Image (cartoon, rainbow, N blue to C red; front, side, top):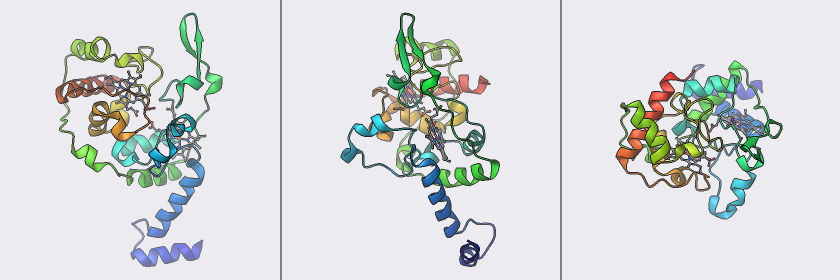
Length: 232
Ligand code: HEC
Ligand code: HEC
């Protein structure tokens, strides 16, 4: 261990940069701690087919650097609060009832917690994973504002996003990630790109293709900005 560290330091010639050896170590550590639930490399989707989605235990992380805000990632790993009210595979956690679908928390696990050091190392590594720079570059989204009433109508009546997503605590659907915190978690370019074409990011996503044009995507992203800036 010590020898490896020394060799790493000699190779990069400094203490400040993570050495290639240290990065490889972090990669191995994440693979063993997280790899059973999260894809850290792009899966061979065509070969795996839809079984990949059914057996997925956590959201894919191999494009983390295109998706998350680095600061959010580092702090969430130390204090993981639930993002998907029904987990990663909602049909597994939802119990139908006469009042509609209920979530059985017994079917949801708590996320593992990292200490500050580990979270920093993990976040640095994950933020360097950016295989989809081209999708981000293809969006022309510039964050702006939208009137609340218009934003809300777009999210609910006109586009039905609320069937699966909540735009406030206790409002909206439960099968998708909560979206009133999306602006705090996610990069604006990712939000716009994912709304425009979810399958470009995740060929096995459960989110249907929206077919929305650029200005409709912008209005929805601006609504997530509006509610995200107010979220606790
Ligand atoms: C037992 C399975 C499991 C393991 C092991 C695990 N995770 Fe997770 N992880 C999950 C699940 C399930 C979620 C979804 C939580 C939610 O949405 O509330 C998640 C969510 C996340 C998220 C948020 C992703 C997103 O797209 O919203 C990050 C980041 C994350 N995990 C990082 C890690 C890291 C780093 C490790 C290893 C140190 C790890 N996880 C280990 C199951 C796991
Ligand atoms: C049929 C359910 C469904 C509908 C309708 C839907 N989504 Fe989604 N959405 C999902 C799911 C599920 C995910 C997470 C990816 C997955 O698990 O496949 C997601 C992911 C997202 C994400 C990325 C969030 C993250 O944390 O990873 C955004 C942004 C988003 N949806 C916005 C929207 C908007 C805006 C609309 C309305 C135009 C919409 N969605 C309609 C199910 C839905």
